[in-house]
Length: 97
Image (cartoon, rainbow, N blue to C red; front, top):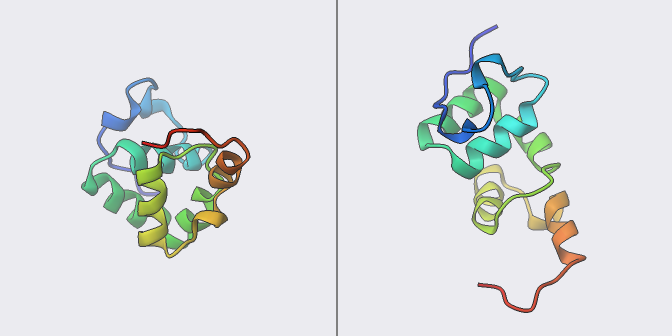
């Protein structure tokens, strides 16, 4: 199996060298989409494939608005497809910056 070659920038709080990138694939995808470089995104797309990312990222427990919209755009998804979006709709806030 090929090695996932991404920067450690997104994984400041974990030992990435010992992280099982198959078992924790959603965690890896979520972190790269939120905090990674463009090259990291290209690497996870090459490693996992667009279809797998599309199927798994909708199960993320939390994504910021910018990342959510970015995922919708590049993976041809709707906000309503995401569990984190549905969860946020259950707890609306007064001020949305």
